[in-house]
Length: 203
Image 1 (cartoon, rainbow, N blue to C red):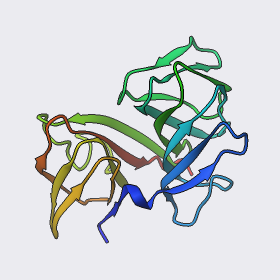
Image 2 (spheres, rainbow, N blue to C red):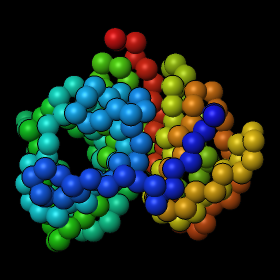
Image 3 (cartoon, rainbow, N blue to C red):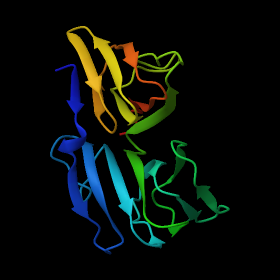
C-alpha cells in the first residue's frame, strides 16, 4: 500500500516506567520494532503528568510540539531552558542529552517524533489551513522514504491516486516514497505537522 491512515482510536497506549506519564504510540518503523530495540523512527503522543527527567534515547533526534495544556519548560543539557508553552510549535533536541521537564500549570500532551541519527533525517513543517499544501517531497535533496502527516487541529481531506483520505484531529497518514497527495478540503483553522523522513545512508 502506498499510504496508511492511522486513526486516533488506533493509538497504542503504554505507561512510563517512572510513573510520570503515558505514551500513545502512533507508528514505529520497522513494523514490530520497540523502543527497547533499534527502531528507525517512532511517532507518539505523550501525556506528561508531573515534573521530572525525560528518558534518554542515545543516537536519536527528537522533535516535540505541544498539543494540549499550558505546556512545560525543558532544560536540555548545555542549553538555556526552553519554554514549550505555545501549541503546535516544533522543538528539536538530541535524545541523548539529559533533559528535565517542569510543567507550567498541570498536565499536558505533546507530539513526539524520534528518528535514528545514523539512518534518517527529519524535515518538519507546520501547515495551516489557507497555506499551500506541502509537496510530497522537499524541493531539494533526496526523496523521502516516508512522509508523515499528523492533523493537530481540525479536519483535512487529501486526494490520493486511489481516492480521498479524510483525516480528523490526531489522525495520521503515513505515505510511502514517491506517493503524492493534494489538498481537497480543510476546516477553518486546521493545522497539521508534515514530516519528511529521508534515509541518510550512514548505515
